[in-house]
Structures are given as C-alpha cells and as structure tokens.
Length: 321
Length: 262
Image 1 (cartoon, helix red, strand yellow):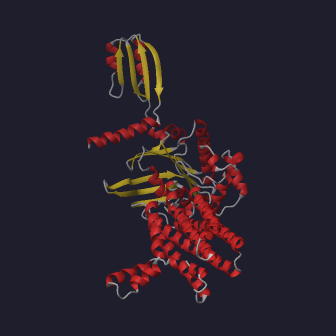
Image 2 (cartoon, helix red, strand yellow):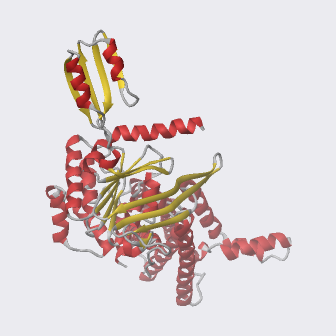
C-alpha cells in the first residue's frame, strides 16, 4: 500500500520533491563514516525546472538515486510527488535519464522503446513512433544503438524517459559530452517538458545551460545544500563598471566607497560598483569634474559567479576552521 | 510478469551476442563434431568412447558457458548503469533478478540445445545407434541443462555479494565439489573409520552443497549392465531436487540483493 504524506507537517502544496534531513552515510576503512549527503533539506515545486548543482563528488547523483529509491537513505525523510521515496506507484509517473546512459547495443531505437515500454506494460507502436519523432530519431528507428552518436543516444534516452508521460523527470547531466547542436536540441526538449506541465529535476555541471532554462536551483557541496532559491533572487546584485578619463586623484578619492572598487592611473578612473549604487550621481560628478565618460557597462551576475563564490566560501571557511 | 519477461528476453539477446560465449560455444560444437572421427583410435568399444567423449565435452562446455554467462550478469548491469534506468521504472529488485536468471536459463537452453542437436545428429549419422541410445543421450542432455540451470542459480546468488572474479572461482568450486559429493559422502561422511570431525564436516558439506553428480548418468548409458532403477522417479526426483535448490538460491539472492547498495 502506498505510504501517506509526512506526518507532523503537511507536504507543501505543489511540492514535487521534498526532503527533510535526508542523509546518506558510507563507511570507509580509511576515512571512517562519511556523509555523502548530509541532512539535505530540498524542495522542488511542481511544474518547474530545478537545477541541482555541485562540484564532482558533491552528492548530486547519490541524492537522485535516493529519490528514485535505488539506494536507501541512512537517515531523514524524502517524498516524491507526495509519497515516500521508493514507492512503486510513484515509479509509474516519474522517469530518470542517468549520466552517460548505456543502452543494450544490439537493440534498435524502436526496440529500446519497446523494452522500456514493457516495464510499464506499454506496447503501443504509435506512441513509440511519436516519441521517436519528438526526439528527431524517427528516421533512425531501425539503426542499432551501436550505430548511434552520443547525441542520438541521449535523445533515445529522453524518449525512453517519456514513455510513461512522467509528471517528474530526473535528468543527470543531460548535456554532458554533447556537441553544441546536440546541446541546443536537448535544451529545447527540456523547455518543451516544462511547457507540457512536467517537473524537471536536472543535475548538471553546465552552468550556462542551467542558467538559461532553470527556474530555481540548489547548490550542493560536500553533501550539504549551500544555496537554494529562485535564480532571479540568487543572481540579484549585479555590478556596473564605469570608465572615465581626464580626472584627477582628488576626484577619485571622493568616489571611494566600501561597496565599490576604484582604481585610478594617469587620469583614468575605473569604478566597479553595485548596480544598486548611485550610478547617476557618479556620472554627474564625472561630468561636473570635466571628465570624459568612456564606458558604462552593466555586468549581470552569472550563475557561474554564484557557484564559484559558494564553493570558494565553503573552501575558505573549511580551511579557516 | 511483463517486466520479468521483458528483462529475460533482453538478457537472452545480450547473451547470444557475447563473443566470449560464442567462442566457447563454437569450440564445444567443434569438439563434439570431431569426436566420432577420433573415437576410432580408441581401443575401447567405439560406441562407448564416442558417447562418453561427446557427453564429457557437452557437460564441461555447458558448465563453462553457465559460469562465464552468469558471473558478470548483475555486476555488468551495475557498472553500465542500465540497472538504474530499469529500477527507476516500476520494477522491483526481485523482478530484475528473476528476469536476469530466467534470461540466463533461456540462453543456456539455446546453447545446450545447439550442442546437443549437433551431437545427436552426428551420432545418428556416424554410428547408426538404436533409438533407445538416442533417447538416453537426449535425456542426459536435458539433465545437463537442469544441472547448469542450478549452477546459474549458484552464480547469480554469489553475484549479489561478491566480485565476478571471486564468483567465478566460488561457482566453479561449488560445481567441482558438488560433482564429487557421492564419492565424498561414501569416503568420509558415511565411513565409520573417518575421524568424527571429518565425518561431521563431510556430512555438513554434503548436506549444504547441491549434488551435481546426480545429473551425470553417463555410466548407465555407456554401460548397458548398469541400470537406473525406476527411471521416471529418478529423473523427476532429480529435476525436483534441482528446482528446490534453484528456488532457495534465488530467494536467498533476492534477500541479499534487496538490501544491497547498487
């Protein structure tokens, strides 16, 4: 029988995934007990594309495997679509595309869909054909997997992951090792999934891809969530760089502020300031001081900046400790 | 049931394409094919040598195929991560394991069937034996099939908790000792002259390990003087014995695999 939603607290409305203090501990002879996933509190809402980011060995794939019920948590709770992880009823409405998937090489694209379809009790040739068309493999349906390129294998992987019309897709490094054209194709498919109302959980290193398609992200490092939230909130606080010429040291001294970086050399002033700072006031001041504005360049904060900042903070914090 | 069937048919498809298995199979077919020609060199009865050699090749090659096929079956699925895609579908671990086992048995059936077919055809054309002998050979081939099905269950059981290399030696060891259980029992467990501790150990080993020597009835086939009393009971009993062991081993394998981290 399916398990009930968590007691002692109602599962948030619209939560596709929720974990509470989810932990996975491995024992190593050399290192003793290691928390590969460490008291993870994660929340993914229905209908969003959620990016799960982290450096190698951060615990991303282990988390996914726990959410899929492939490995067992050491502690904590996890719920997928309102049911406890590992519940077989949930497996009917979720799907998973592993990192660098392997498919039986002797099978054709169509046979792959038949095989995975049979695991759901689906034997609908029209559906298989539609899925092959959706991932642009209709013309290659009779080729064996050994004849498929990496991109084609990834696309047949996506096709198999859509066999059961999943409400929630787990994609582990979906664009890893693909060429730019294959990247674009996979990205378009993922965006299409969201338009169809599906929830997509992506684990990835491709930060620019994640930034383009994800609604929310979480950054995990050494098994712990370091940041989690909407991308627009996390990336708020961009910078503006102002470059001006024909100024003197005295003026440069007046624009120094704690949240700005100011450099002055041979009459050229370079100010790097928060976009929330008084940019217009600075520009007026430059004009009043008879300086010449060379450029005003807004620099949006990127996910890569946030990621590096998060991981570096952790490293320096760890070293300080 | 659909999931088990699908996993088992895919396993057969994979198994019959594995080059190492095909090479072993081809060597087996080749050896069986040259036995009738070589047997004329023997000083013993031509027919006896031919039957004995053909059955020996059939048994050894079948056992080798069974071990090589099954020791890598589960570890390969984990290493290539195909198991993750399968277990993320509504497939229970026990269904996966049973599907893999049944696939292995089907593949073994095909391979033994091919070798046995070649053996019977060549035997018939070269030696023109009476039909009764042909049926004896067919029965022996079926017993070997049950034997390797049991051996596949042993290997699948071990593959849920040991590495393929260790599994290879463990499974081969179990088969080796299991093939000598009858003489082992007579020499030690049933011998009042043996030390009590040796007798106890021998009794323990002979009660735990499956008795593979039950499946080798070559003697009554090559020596018409030796007969099996009540053949039907013997064959049914041996098949039932194998089925019981297979069930126990697969259930034990499921219990271990269900708790294993993959």
